[in-house]
Each structure stands twice: as structure tokens, then as C-alpha cells.
Image 1 (tube, rainbow, N blue to C red):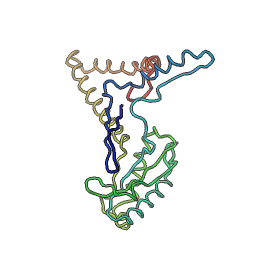
Image 2: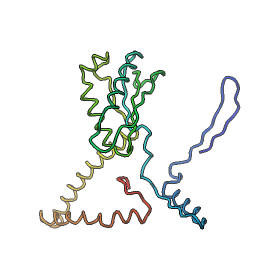
Image 3: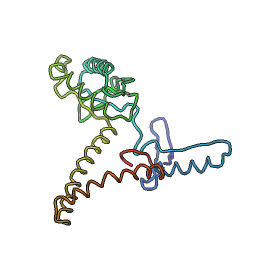
Image 4: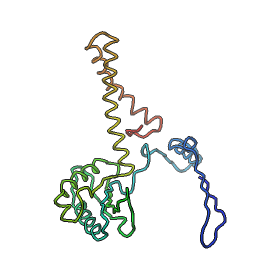
Length: 229
């Protein structure tokens, strides 16, 4: 990315930003290789560079929910109660809620024409996305229509958009559905190929053996042992 500043005065300024094209940006594997080459010249230092995970970095606040209301006082009261409730949640896994914060109370922020504030949470293990869904389920169960009415909120006043984490969860769900469809299609093709309903099952039983070489292959090629890899 290159940034160029042009003429500016007391009322305006011009800034030109040129972004690097997606196809020419360095990926994690390339950066890892470059760093390994740099540290290879150090005789008395042993440095190991690894890729922590595939895909974009985890957000500082993986959990983020939106509270909609045009009244700032109502937003302040509702987000405060939600924040207190989330702090006291005990997750079923070893993951824990470490911090809860409220954003956009002092600014006018709108989504689809509706003013909102956000309640965000940090976890001890931010890469464990199961905690996101568990908190959403508990918040939805606790703050039902009657509880929202007590807080002077409408029935649709709560929203759950985790940003990149929402996209990741959606990708996992889509991938799982696509995998099921692909397996059914493969089974149908194998039935036509072998003219048998049993032989394709034997072929499918061999699929788990592919994992024997999968994870060593990821390690040898310097890739992270993650879903996206």
C-alpha cells in the first residue's frame, strides 16, 4: 500500500491511497519463508517461524452483539445489563469470558437506519468459536420478548453480527452442507460405475486412511493444521 498526501489547507486535505492487488499480496507462507531466510544467517540463534493459522487474524473481541434503540438512555441501560449478564456466563468448555465492553454509546451509529450500540466480549481462547454460539443462545434465552419490554426495547432490538467470525461460522456450515452433497453425488456415481450398492461403501471406508498422510503433509509444507488448510 502506498499513501500520498497532496495540498491541504485549514478546510480540506487530499489523500491518495493505492492498495496492492489481492493477487500480488504476500501470503503467510511466503512471509514465513522470507523470515526463515533472514534468520538463517544467525549462527548463535535458533529461530523457528511457523504460520499460526490459516485465514484472517482473530478479532480482539470475537463476540459482538448489537442493541437497537433511538433512545440513548435506553441503550445505556440495556447494554449495561447485557454486559453484566455476559460477564457472569460460565461456558461449558474450558474457554472463559475475560472482558466485556460496550461501544458506540457516545456516538450516533446506525445500521439500516436504526441507531445501535454494541456489547463485545473477549475470550481466554479467541479461536474457539463455540463460545460465540453458546453466549448467543444464553442471551437469547434470558432476554426474551418480556425482558426486552421491561428494558423498553422492541422485540427485534437484539442483533448478533460477529463480523469475520460470522463469516467463518457461515463458511463452516456451508462447507459441511457441500461435503454432504458431494458425498451423496460421489456415491451415486460409484453406484453407476460398479453397478452395485455395496462396493461404493467399501470405497468410502478407505477415506479415513487419507488422514494418515494429511497432517504430516501439512507440517512438512509449513501449513497450519487448521480447517481452511
